[in-house]
Image 1 (tube, rainbow, N blue to C red):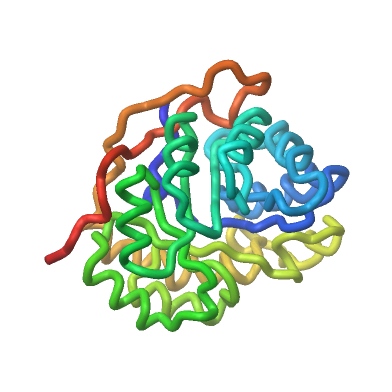
Image 2 (cartoon, helix red, strand yellow):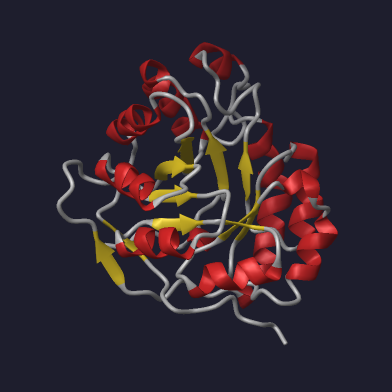
Length: 262
């Protein structure tokens, strides 16, 4: 069974768990899953990242995607796959890395900044695009790119995103966000994360990002859903790995460039 396309995941907010200590991974993961986060990434450029991914995988409920970021090499992809990760996020656009992640049955979300990089990533099989660093670009940059990049191609601004800035990026064509909030997202201390939630229901207990998504994201997604279509891709299975992935296989999109709206 394949996991949902990125466009089907709600809320499409990637929690960037930079510096997550393996000893705290279970506590932090339980809080994030309870809050409603379905996309988690642990950057590999910090010690203990693979052990943290393993811990998150061990307590993940059905549905969420989790894996590594700062994926720069084929070896990085193999390392994340070996501990059961299903998500690879990169700051760059490397066709070899993208191809390998897709062939391993993993979701690939490479970094891009230009239309050229977007088309290269999509033709290499990427499932979505990470606009990085987003704080360098205004929402107008996404609006211009959307005149070339098909609406169903997910674009996730990452870097400098704040709850109050989400609405403008969404209106310009963003599909979701990668977020790092020192008050809530990584939380070296799980108790500090827990104290940042207010009482109430699932979204009410989540950090400010989820609250903002509930108000601005859902409406924007509803307006654009009529022109989105699910990833219709062949399925791949990870084989020869010691750990069972969060979900057994992942839909992959092969050989399709970022379509044009013209």
